[in-house]
Image (cartoon, rainbow, N blue to C red):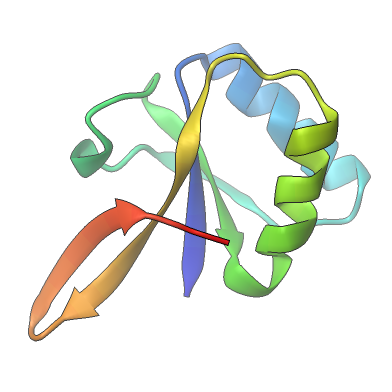
Length: 86
């Protein structure tokens, strides 16, 4: 399972990815899911076991374009996109 960090700025998405890389947090830059209904087109996907480390890095930094943490979950047979809560 993964958590997706959505930003409204491509530049800040990539800066956050650099910060994750520098701190040894595994991530992938992905196309923002259309269900997010926001964002710049790319987001950062992080394994759930690394989500707390990523959140901590985000909280210590300045990323005003950050929109939120999201996840896909299965509800019955449907995949639902929802806000991720820590």
